[in-house]
Length: 163
Image (cartoon, rainbow, N blue to C red; front, side):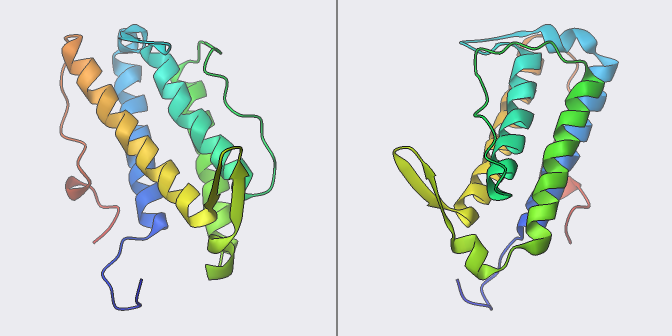
């Protein structure tokens, strides 16, 4: 990527992820029954999907910081409250911000082994950002399909996370 190529920063992407997390946690505080919506598959309830989003943030942030965290257990169905979910998100976001504040181009190229896959720190950051957005879109669809009230769109264009 050249220095003049238009780009979005990881800080901006994680600011958007933070916007989405806070938006949805506030929604679940107003509509707690929405956390019990069955989203199907191994995930089960919505609260497990939201936990998964934040557990993945924490896992990858920990790997980037060299903490060697345990992989999230997809069978772990901890029933977290909206406040606990928000704390889990804030822990992951703090780790990601700490990593970004010290990372340079060389660090972004550092390779990480995930069994059959080896990838750069930069790719891990992209995975975290895209994984989170993907699942919040899934949350929006599941909430609407379960008959809960729709809120304003969650598009980045309506936020103030970037100019």
